[in-house]
Image 1 (cartoon, rainbow, N blue to C red):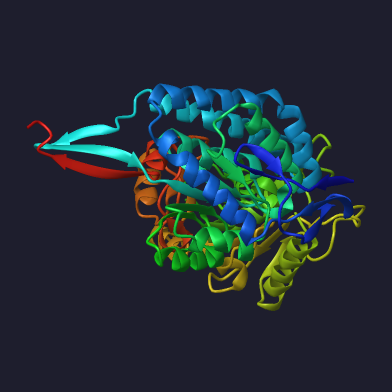
Image 2 (tube, rainbow, N blue to C red):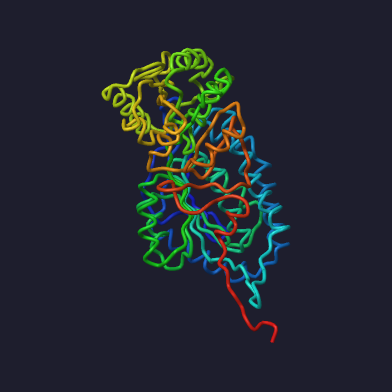
Length: 474
């Protein structure tokens, strides 16, 4: 049993003033593995004060100094990558390969930010005006449980690159991972107060970050419902916000696609990170006249998508992070049946032999209408809804008939046609004929999938404010 009873403020590990505790559960076994003491609003205030005090000096650091800090952070995270992976598998339950990739992206986030700074222009000229991009101040970084390391490090990398300081509220469900990561970041030796980490609930620590007047920006990744609450609260003090929220991503298989290749890819898109991914392609749109072929190929491909022990070779889908998340997924599976969708793969309950953990069965529905709950709501589990369409125009209409707009997928044998369809989809990112990783491309959503963009040049600009200076040549 691990005991997490420290938070990180002003360059030191300190005991929180909050007294609430939370039991940490291994989702693969359902058994307790630790306990965390949560911070409260007073701890959030102390973290903000430390970040505020550190900001004036850090804002004046040179680009070269910040590049050095970022490189040290990357090295510190990479040095303990095996431990980080082990903690993520144990506490989150992600398949081993998923956790390895998330840990690698955490270190790479700092490296990419350092490379970006080498070519990023903080000064430009518009006519006779000198435009200087200045750091915003104290940035509050609020992160979810489904990729703890990469979210924290990706956001922190942009804050540091900009010259801002940070207060961080990770998910309280990731406390073991956060403790280990905090030790890595501390080892990099940044000035005290540049980053501060407080374990705590959203309605205490997160709420204090949102309302506090000394916080200039919030970068939040999580549900659309919570994102709306943050946006309303941030407006009171005109905080800048970047919100990366939910999704219900369409995956269009055009009739000229290679279905033999596209169907396994579609299952991979729907079940990435055990289905606990905002960009998962959970609505599969296929031509009605090829529906029987699609069913046959899905049945065949599903056999290779193993649900099981996240440490075992070949596991593609691990347990849901909590019992509550398990029950949420079960609710939607039952709702799909009640609304008249046909079960092709999986269904309610746990897979045989996996009764102890928070495991769900890979579930695929056919006969889905786009007004069903399983086609409208973000389930956050390995549940795929297959929807038929008559022609290309209808496929685009169905794909865009959602409150979300985070991600989309298109498969076609004609690159020009695929590009034409992609251009009509309302989504922040579109993948054509594959799953890709372009970490410097902007990431974020249209509509209720969020505000702003993260990653790369666009992500850095979100931590900067332009100041126009005129008469500077006089």
